Length: 272
Image 1 (cartoon, rainbow, N blue to C red):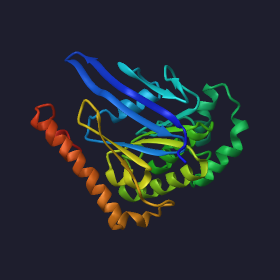
Image 2 (cartoon, rainbow, N blue to C red; image 1 turned 90 degrees about the vertical axis):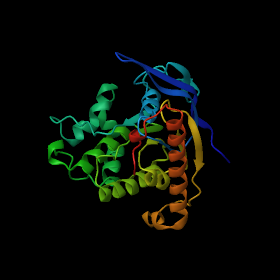
Image 3 (cartoon, helix red, strand yellow; image 1 turned 180 degrees about the vertical axis):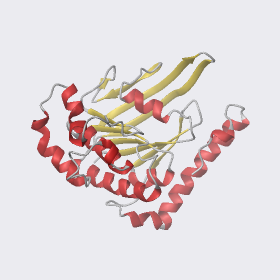
């Protein structure tokens, strides 16, 4: 039985104003995310993936259309939404634990009330023992794991992730993907994940939305029919490669069509 929608995106449109004229980032994009789902957004570079995610987090308003979370339109920051960015954005003068406490302090919460939860997350992310280390003493992967703990510290329902592993090497990225699935399965969160890496999206997701070149529109939706739980070894199986290849072909065809229409420069496409 399918769970209830927690996120509903209806005809999301975003136009940025710049000195060079308007930039049409999103156009009439629709998406539904059900409670507990892991959904990814993929598409060519500049197609509006991050624009949409930031609108979900109320970091900027849409030009038209709407985003609803738990049936309420997003008009400002919401407590049930956590965000993980491309960069860990840890404060260098605070140690790891005080960085994790930071959003709780902003919300006027007493961090100690959440200590058991934080300790459990630190254990799941292999950060136990590094609580008093400063960001400069941590590897890039450890810093990004800390940012995930920080985002989950106050127990949000929804986690928005904007290419969180993009700066990591391939081996560390694989480790992070396995860790993220373990956290998702244990915490039963709803995750919306932006990535340029098609294999990453297929490995992690229940569904993948493919976006057209800018302005980002709905191109195709894929239901990932791989069994769960998913060991990393599933990425070597023929069905996995078949899905990855299909999604890549869909993106290439979208780029080719846009290029033929004179609306997109082919060199902007991010090759895997």
